[in-house]
Length: 234
Image (tube, rainbow, N blue to C red; front, side, top):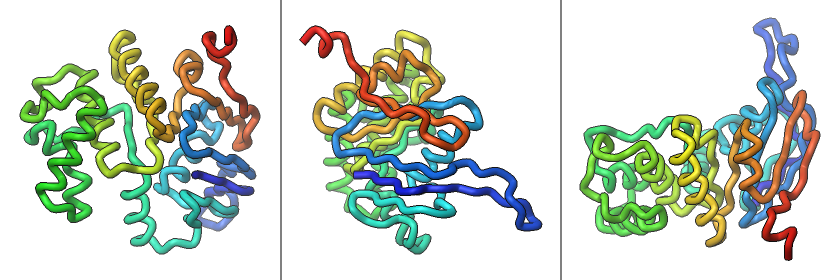
């Protein structure tokens, strides 16, 4: 699904000298259907890795294969189209358009892909059903709770039927109870086969995932499966 080989990301000063080597040789493979937490302290390289995995940035060296296709050699326009089709993003901020209904917000990515209105509506409703919000089609964001707004954002990320759902601290702006409900939504999506990559600094959130990849100083220092209590008993 996503394969990184000897990946490096170097940021340079204007004079051409190295300012920082954010990633120093990353080898990671994320398989279809996995639920992976990316962790690391500030400056570890986790945000840089997230940006590259999400096709928002390019590596300086190395290879990145996404769904079998090489990312590093793509032209900018091709990469933008491929990103829109293969990656769904969920961030801390909901980034919903206040003037639009829930349904219209979810349809936005499909509008930019040129999908006809009838098909946009069909796919938006299907995505909202996945997050249990199909009964809120005509509501505006201000009429929803924070947790409901984040679920709309998740539906918007799902509407293009992406290969990977990427979540960057998705519970960061939510209270504890609402955050737990959002994590349950991600778990339900994983159960139906969704590939999920979640960036988090919170160990309690990472424990809800199935695998943890931890970075330190631009390198992978830990890559392990998470043993859940029910699995341990079995």
